[in-house]
Length: 306
Image (cartoon, rainbow, N blue to C red; front, side, top):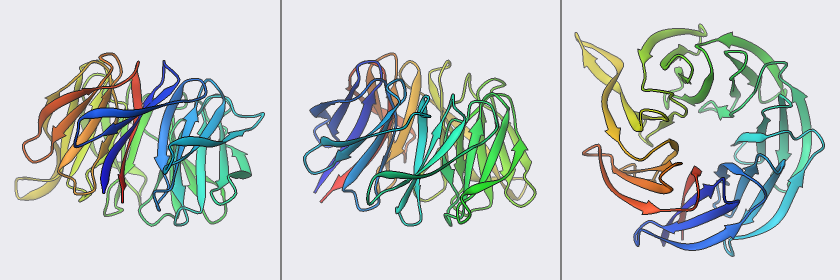
């Protein structure tokens, strides 16, 4: 068994494969231009990487760590956020500047559907825990698009703060957490009413939200304040459980991508401007160490290879 991090070095057109136990890079892969976001298939066999300025998706074999296919489309224009649905059978991708959603069959790695959001700068993909709904933050329209996965079509939109980028569904399926980078807020949206039950002040330019495997914590990297906000989803205040920021962990400059290990006792954050990865102890909520990566690491994913 080997624990690895797949780290996208977006201004070097490369991927660092980092051995977690050794705390060092064990391989580097050349990619198309400007790799941004990454997702690993549920069986752990393949990795998909959006190369935003190359307008491609690189498909990587996780046994050899070689690129085995490059997916292209004439309407790719800064492909960015991506994630899996239907037990990993389909991959959804948001193309930011063309404001399109693409659906890819993960068996054939062919595009099987596409449709516009009709919103400004559609950027990320976040499936609900049951896989029936996808939420897409639109940075330019200050709202979230709802996609019906079964129908593969837009089901509606709802407003949030300014410049939403980070988005994540709570593990219990009740809420969509949204990080609004322009007004430095976190909105906790009730999935039934599509209105915020809670609004929280974030750090300076919150850009991602990632939940710990048990759903207890939401980690939110704040680009300009160079820290990670830790939201305790079960913080008790006046006898009630409420989401509350309990700490900000200082890390590197321009933190971006975040991931956790399977056990949830370690988190990893890619620091764009210090070219390294922060290893965080989730129990103590302290930075443990930093490990070198390439130039401007951003997207990051955890892989346990058995």
